[in-house]
Each structure stands twice: as structure tokens, then as C-alpha cells.
Length: 301
Image (cartoon, rainbow, N blue to C red; front, top):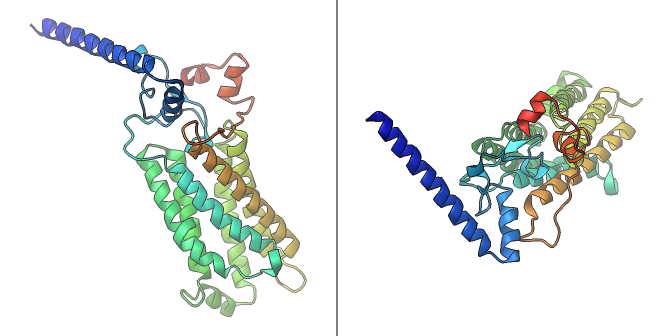
């Protein structure tokens, strides 16, 4: 009897799959060109009528690395997603806060004090980016959750350190010695340089825009840390090095906005789609060139 039940379930399952495939096929035939393009764009994020077209055929549904989803490598689309793509929100929060601080580091219009960044770091770069990181965890993106949550924590800690009179961190260190704060802050930035370098390693086989974002941010942390540790003759942070760090911070901000736009703009809401350039040595790049892949890559394509 158990064999018969299993057979019945198998037959019913096949009928169900055939029925679903037939329904999907009819739905696709009834679509206009515009509707098909919109559905195609939506399917990239795991929803819409085209999201599961190939699921019944047993084909691989892994998508290529995409900065707009904060995915540095091949990943499976999120099926039956209950929330929107959180990556553009986190990228935008990071971009604006980094943009303002980068301008101050470059002494734009004579600005030298980063106090204005405190408010942005608490509200947007800190809280909102941390929330985006938690939502990345909800959709199963380990890299996105780690990066966005960590940099959300960075901006919150940055704001706490520089809050005027609030936590007395700066004043306490300055009382302990003339260069205690500069040395401490420099080492703090070097620590973030090391962490960001680990993330850079994870983007080496992604896209040019995604890799450039993390590389420029890593260089910004390194240069700003050196500026506080390798001070000028007056014992102040080295201005030329700090300006160089501000330049790379600005570059990181614009690359974050670029990747955020790539995650927002599609055929349904924009006249253009932001191009993402895959490295020739990435799995996607090698596949496009028809190059033979190794065993591990074959399993992931």
C-alpha cells in the first residue's frame, strides 16, 4: 500500500508541476512586450511571474555577482520574498555619510571639524544602515549582513566618539596626553582598514563597481589612519595624507551610490539599466568567454 501511495504522490506531483508549468507558459504568452520586460526585471530580485520559470526544469537559478543586491558572488534568488531588496538603502545611507565626511577631510570650503557628521552618522549612516544589514540577514545574504551591519556600527561608534561633551571620550584622552586621542583614533581607523581588506578579498571575483567601492574605502581608512598616526611637525594630523584619504572616501561614496542605483533602476522604472562589468576572471566573465571552468566553478554555474 505504501508503494501505491508514493506512486500516487509522485503522479500528483508531476501533474502539479505540469499544471504550474502550463499556467506559467500561458501567462507568458498573454504578456505584452512591456509587461514581459517588467516581469523580467522583477525576476532578478526573486519575485514576479518570471521568477520561477526554470524551477520546474531543474535548471540552475544562480544569479551572477551584483552590487545592487550586495552579492559579491553567485547567489540564489530569494523565492517568495516578503521584504524589498535592502541593499540600496544600506548603500545610500553609507554613501551620503561618507560623502559629507570625505568633503570635510578634503578641507572643502575651509571645513575642518567633522561635528556635522555626528548627526548624519547617528541617524542615517548608523541606524538606517544597521537596519539594512539586519534585513540582509533576513534574506539570507551573509556578506551583505556582515558589511552593512558592521559599517552601520562604525558610523554609530564614530558619532559616539565625536559627540561634543556627550561621552567625553576626546577630552579624556587629551587629558591623558597630548597625542593620546590622535594615536587612539589612528589605530581605530587602521582596525577598520584591516576589516575592509577582508571584504575586498571577497569582491575580487565580482564586478568592477563593487570591487572599486571596497578598494577605495579600504584606501580611505588606511590613509586617514596614517594621517593621525604620522603627524606633521606641529603634532597635528598630516593634512596632505588626510586629503588623500578624503578623496578615496568620496570615490567610495560615489561607487556606493552607483551600486545602489544599479539595485533600484530596472526596465520597469527607468529608461536605462546601470551596467555592471564582471571581471574576466570571474565565473560569469569566464562563462561569457566560453572558457573552461574548474570543478568547483562548474558546480556553481
